Image (cartoon, rainbow, N blue to C red; front, side, top):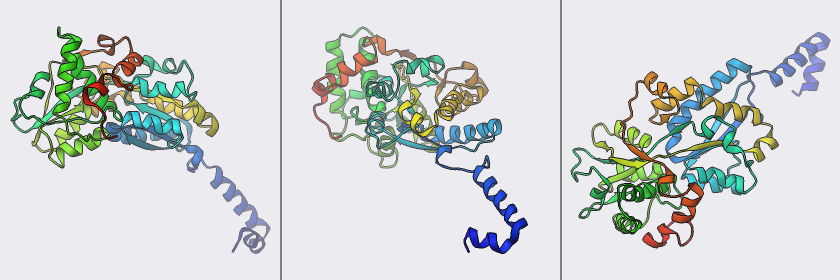
Length: 346
């Protein structure tokens, strides 16, 4: 029976009741429609974090506004994710990517404005991280520092720097571990060349698939991993894995932004901005710390009862002028990575 037949059968009073019910159902605050959904395009290691953030934000947003919001996440290698947003494959409302250059690539394509980095607190960085080592129980290879990775026949698992933020940061951390402790760039180049001789010829495209290679497939002696990913892996390994913190590593700086070209078209700018601003709230920061990311607010780690080891973390400016310079110097065609490892499978 269609709505017209129901109207005729119910009579005038009943029809009025039905009409009001239909209008209310369509416009009720709890009704979910495409305008109430956000797409967050993120990098590989953030799956568990944003699953929790999404739920917490949705509950907070509904409490404050009466509107129900759902957030859908897409995960993959950070650099590849950036390219899918640019191509339109992933029409992101927001991006939460692992590297400045992966977000800034959207600016270069006109998807976000020149001042995107200044629209949120702390230059749009809600947390930081670093690259650490994951080893087998008991650390049988006795790995403690970067030079230990290239001893004997040690097999290193690290994602492809052409597709993965984890992969890029691992390469930069390896280089910086040499030059920030007195080595020359020639020394760093020689180290990096040897380093990649200990890496499988075909690398995983992202952090999570590299973790699966190391943990599930039990391939390799050491995995270079985001700190948060390492914490998760070790917790789930039931004693089969351990984290090793090298004395020095890179300061990893994930960035976030709403994608103007998409939110303006879809009318989701306000909620996209609110979603990212939530990351900087006390509740958001505490959740960030609980999932192994170093929060902007130190007190959030205390609230979460999380203590991060105090190691030397060097910024990108220790090895390049800025992130754009690092991208060109290390990862552009015929850059340092091409010269030390050659063409690898993407």
